Length: 74
Image (cartoon, rainbow, N blue to C red; front, side, top):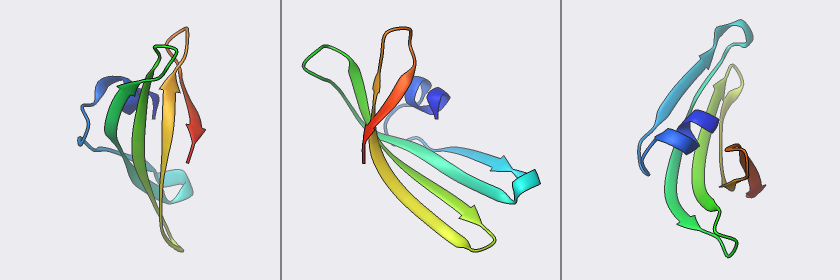
């Protein structure tokens, strides 16, 4: 998630897999803006596929001091 939020343009999808746990999925930033404090924020969509099905979610993350991204809402 950190890599995708920092590096990918909006609309680009990053895939991932965790074979040991039988999981795979994708993560896609969909919009970018600055909040009132000047921090970059991004809306994102995520999808996880497991043996029991597919879960899709979306949320918002903002970059904090030190360069890390923190999810601030769904």
